[in-house]
Amino acid sequence: MSFPEVCCNTPPVKATYIAKGARDKIGDLECYFSGSKDSKRGILVNYDVFGFHANVIQLCDILAEMGFYVVLPDLLHGKPLTEADLGKPDVFNSFTQNAGSWAVIKQEYAKVLDHFKDNRVTAVGVAGFCWGGKMVVTALSELDGLAGGAIVHPALIENGDMAKVNAPLMVLPSQNEPDFTAEFDSMKDKPFFSDCYMERFDDMFHGFCGARGDWGNTEQAKRANDAIKLLVGFFSRILSK
Image 1 (cartoon, rainbow, N blue to C red):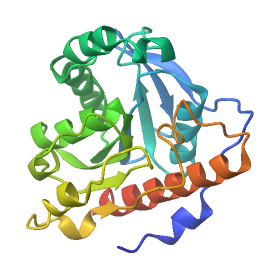
Image 2 (tube, rainbow, N blue to C red):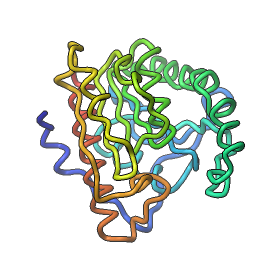
Image 3 (tube, helix red, strand yellow):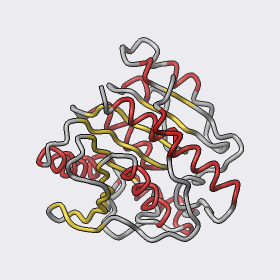
Image 4 (cartoon, rainbow, N blue to C red):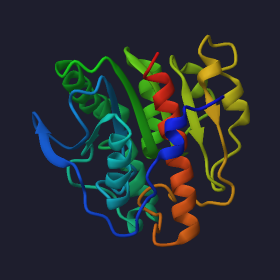
């Protein structure tokens, strides 16, 4: 799969960062907005379980700088999980069955997708990290009108999930994720498979491109930027069809 030249010009991530976008609401849903509403290409970004982290906000701004209108909804309504919560199986299980369940999250996706329609955005993609990756794959399976999605160090992906998607998918696992080769290959018979892409970051850990990434670390920053370039290239391709 080839990528547009634009991905080669993606700005590098920074250790210290001042957000360029703004927070506002879609109804009762607080969101971070970045980029021009005049763009016809929109991206809904599904953060990881740690919520509105500076890294994901910077990532949204980079995508916006490359010409996309980006919306980062606060899907967890100011109540993200903590590192300590992840060590408590009962807390995490409750999260996936309640606040972090697709039954709840799809209602928030609908608000953002309606916002894109209201602003005459004609092509919409979704990007998700960690738990957000599961939400993106499910969205591509159940929601109409999505041009494609990308998942970065995804969590909770089950056998058969990728076979259900109805639009191109890019998969960027880290060293801590399972081998998704069989899952990825399950999409081979789909008419859009030529637009799908997978690349493993076996030198990076789960979360390097999200809240767990230390972008003051030269190697982590470089690899996060490599992943973001892939995101830019992928969305440039599928949102221009």
